[in-house]
Image 1: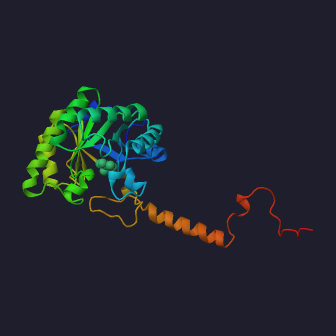
Image 2: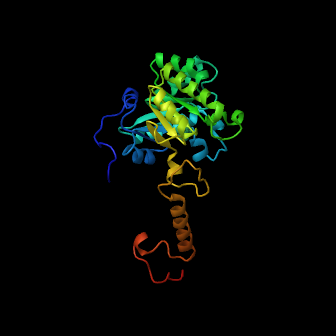
Image 3: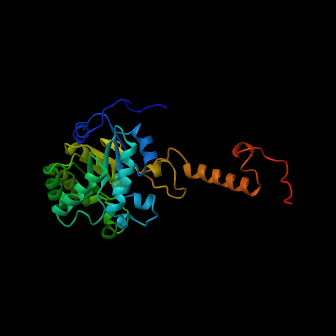
Length: 281
Ligand code: KIV
C-alpha cells in the first residue's frame, strides 16, 4: 500500500486545514461508510460525509430528502474508519436555514453523536450570520457556495453558477463566508476564472468541485471518481476506476457459475464431496 500523505500524521484540525491556504493542495473526498472511510483516510486530508449520501447510497433523486438521522448514522460509520483526516459532516436541507439557533442545535447534535470535527452548510452571504454564530460558539464551519445542490429547485437545475454578471454575487458570497469565520469554502461548478479570482481574493482555502485547479484543494464524490455509476459522467469528474463495470462483470460471472453448478466448488464446501449422492432408502 502506498500512502499519499505521511502515514503517522496526527489528526488534522480545522485551523490546520485553514493554514494550508496558498500552500500544499488539500485533498478531499466524500465517504459514507467505514470501509471507504478507511481507504480515503490513507490519502486524504479532509473527508466529507456529504448529504450526497442520499443520492449515492439511498437512491434519492436529490439531496432534499436527507435528514439529520441519516447524517448521524453515516457520520458514525465514517468516524470508525478515520484516523488522521479531518471529518466534516453536512447539515442537511431544513436543519439550519431557519435561524442561527436552529443551526446551532442541529450542528451540536451532529458533533456530539458523530464526533465529527466540523460541519458544512450551503449558502453565501445570506448564511454569514449563521456561520458567525456557530464559529463563535466553537463549531467549525466549512461553507459551500456556487452551485448549492440543496437549492436545486430555486436554481432550476444543476447549472454552472457565476457566469457573466452573476460572478460578482458569487465573489461576494465567498468574501462573506470568509469574513464570517468559515475555515474553508467549497466552491462548486463555477467558471475556472471565477474560482481563481475567489481563491486569490479570500484568506481561507477554496475547495473546488467543477471549479479550477487553482483552488487550494479539490473534492469529489468518491463513488463518482471510482466509476460506481456507469451512466453518470459529468464533465467535472475524472474517473480513476470503473468499479461499476468490474462489479457488473463479477456479478454476471457469479450468476453464470450458480446456474451451471460450478459454484460452490470443492474448495468452497465443508467435508468430502461424494461423486454422487446415494439414494435415500
Ligand atoms: O454532499 C456532497 O457530497 C458535497 C460535495 C460534493 C461537496 O457537498
